[in-house]
Image (cartoon, rainbow, N blue to C red; front, side, top):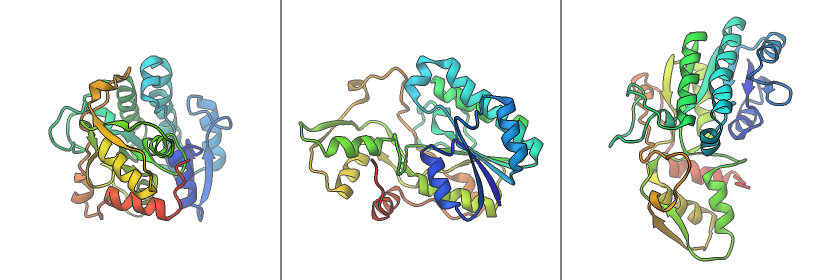
Length: 282
């Protein structure tokens, strides 16, 4: 299969390259391909003529989006519209990556694919606008929402904890009142592989199973890497950020259950597998 990967040099894109090495791949990333430039995307699409486009490119710096909404919407919304239009014109199927930030995090249960979206950050709003553009411009699509992602290359929470945990110092304070599904790029790539064989239209939640707070996730990271620095739980209020973080990032994989696809791996299992396979987290 011919697969074009936007954002192919990023954390998920690099994992995709490793998983899909037997396919004919085009890594569409800066400076060669600019998803916010119609001609750049159309040229890449027409020359390569892909069967599948996996759209990973995004502005994911949550606080950076809050400070620069023009760039956030240019990349996450306009860029997604341009990619979707080009994929549709090429007759390619589109799998696009989205986020838990399309929800406000106020629910007291995991969010399903059918819950009402209500972003309260520029990042979440721009990604939701990208979802809407994809629905309009490329009918043959699947949107995968993920959360708390980590992989061999950063940046991610795991990379930060790995670095700080290896340094000497007082115990690290880690937020213990936000909950979500820590998710490896390998797990997401595995889901995309399954969707290549069994296409599912619309929105799918693709985070790992099981839940944790950031503090609980940090404890497990320290355990699997043998890090000895102390950890103490703290509240979100002790770490104010320019953009609010969702208190609840849990995603229910209702659609996967409905279509009879196997569940995502548990986050602890995925983390252990990541480390055993040489996950560098550098």
